[in-house]
Image (cartoon, rainbow, N blue to C red):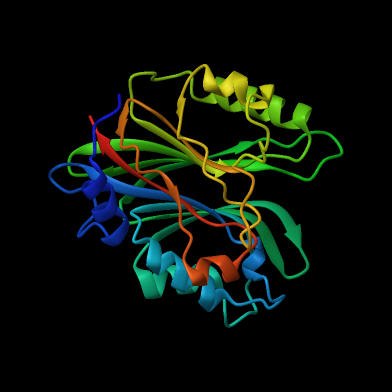
Amino acid sequence: MIIAFDAQECADAQASAPSSPMTATRHLRVATYNIHRTIGNDGQRDPARIAAVIDELGADIIALQEVDWRSDRDDDLIAAATTETGYHAVAGSNLRRHRGEYGNLLLSRLAVRRVRRIDLSQNRKEPRGAIDVDLTGGGATLRVIATHFGLRAIERWRQAARLRDAIADHPDHPLLVLGDFNDWCPGCPSLRPLLTMVAASPRRASFPSRRPLLALDRILYRNIAASPCFRAHATPLAHSASDHLPVVGEIVLD
């Protein structure tokens, strides 16, 4: 379902953050953001800069990819996100590294009721996965999946098929799938298995952040009213903080 937003409403949506999670109108701002291990275009690791971009977004729900967190670091991004911005954080580690982990992170201002994790790894490829959660607020439940697909087309096709199977249950429930799908080619078949079950946001160039050309980051949805206001968040800070720009959308639950 698509609802009509005029140009002024789109401008207002970009300029203002929702005042509280799951308002009476069930209007939500959602985003997906590959943070490149908090390494910016200057080559510096700066979690505070990423946290500032997250604050700019004003989103109720954010899926982060390429999160590299270590328990011995004072600049831990999860701690910054939860203590400074008030989000609930759900981690989805795909790879264990020395004194730390690496993977996806879901931030939500809505209450987290149920957490599942989906293994999307393919043989001899970088481990991949998805966070699968149920969020509640305002008397409604929303299922959200946060993911990061692989680099090869056949790998992405298999991951899309795995997610398609995972969301086949409860087809009438509201669903968001947020992620970096690495699907750079319009019309390429790698997402087709998943797109039989969900609608996709318009393609918005988000990579590379210095001069975006490729629409790698997408918002997919089902049983949700989505405005045409999907956009890449292209502020000066976002252009420098990561090699991807965040992609943001406005939705209304039916």
